[in-house]
Image 1 (cartoon, rainbow, N blue to C red):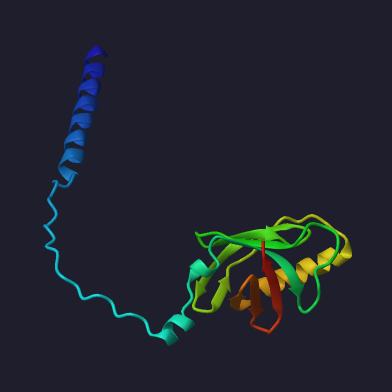
Image 2 (cartoon, rainbow, N blue to C red):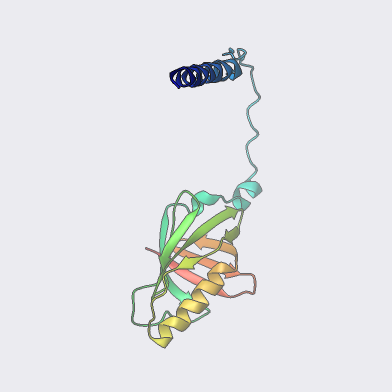
Length: 168
């Protein structure tokens, strides 16, 4: 019995040593990266006045906060908290619909605003606020374009519905 235990212990030790050797053998040898030689690159061409006028990027919205001033041509519903939206610099947005908090992702390319799936809390509010929330989140979820004129942000959905905000 003692001999059997010694053989099992020796086999276990041999298996551990073989496994350590196999792991060491499978590690890649360190290599040195080739040295990059800097080359002179031509300076990028300056954009034309027309290109500058048409160009927009995420920095237009990134880091901004807005308060709802008009939804589908009407003033926001009274009561509840003010409807708001904030765009961070990482492509995320969050805010309040006047009743519930919402969040989601966004991206900007030119004047095109694309909003990802929107999530929200699910508290019940008075009917007027619930109707506003539904219209607000539906229009925001279907965002197609946006414009910023001074302190006014207008988001237009694919169906033409608009949400207008003032800078917070």
